[in-house]
Length: 122
Image 1 (cartoon, rainbow, N blue to C red):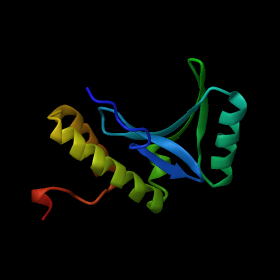
Image 2 (image 1 turned 120 degrees about the vertical axis):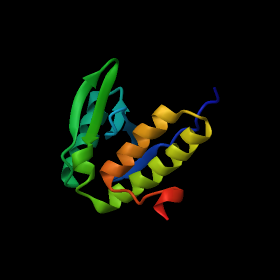
Image 3 (image 1 turned 90 degrees about the vertical axis):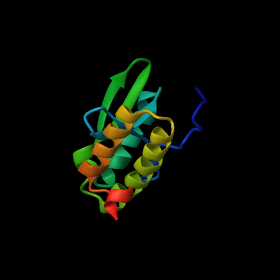
Image 4 (image 1 turned 180 degrees about the vertical axis):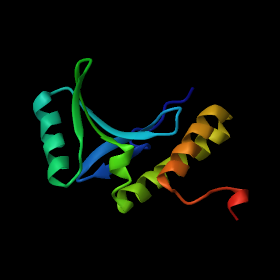
């Protein structure tokens, strides 16, 4: 298994790099992890000031700052960025033959309202 380059599944929100994480049910979450509570809280506050309803929770050895899919869908520009990331991840997943993962990413793209891809879309 080859390592993925850092940042390939990330988007910038209010100047903060956040990872796009999709689960098997087809939903996505944007997450940023910090070891220091002060840094995590500063990110959370920055997202709040930018108008996002972000969350902050402890995790093993650090803290997650996160935004749910429903929050992402409120911002069309952010949704477009995430669609581009999901499209790239989907293509890589299909090329590797991981069909189950490709389906979950395709569901996330559908739920976000991303432009349709592939031969059926034309």
